[in-house]
Length: 192
Image (cartoon, rainbow, N blue to C red; front, side, top):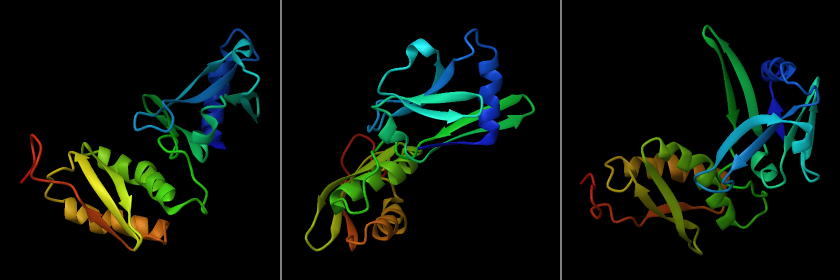
């Protein structure tokens, strides 16, 4: 479920050694899982905070606990720790936090939405934008609607063809192309 690097495990062992209760572990969780506002976190988990339906992941010297609601969104998550001159940086990467991972044999629409949320929208969010699927046609065209910083952006055609279309066609073989139905000249601040 979660890959915790050796450096991160050592970091957690150091932190947990300072806790009063030697059985304190860590909790890995997702707030607002499956939404664009999903946030991942790690906290201390004393023994009295462990729930019956938690998943326990055992590591040398400590356990990590994941609540039932967060578990499917933490599939393929990675926790790492990088030592730096001023201390260190703990990173938690959870590619499925914003969209629950779907099976390879799930309907094409579900797989398209999954890749839009898990791979494409995080990249577009760096520029204040997002994209959503409005329709998947019988002839394999994913009809998309851009919003935020993508609406009216002069680079939307490049993003659409070189990024989104290539990704969707590679990941979802049923996709034969993409079409943008966004009214780029509308809105308060279009780039055109």
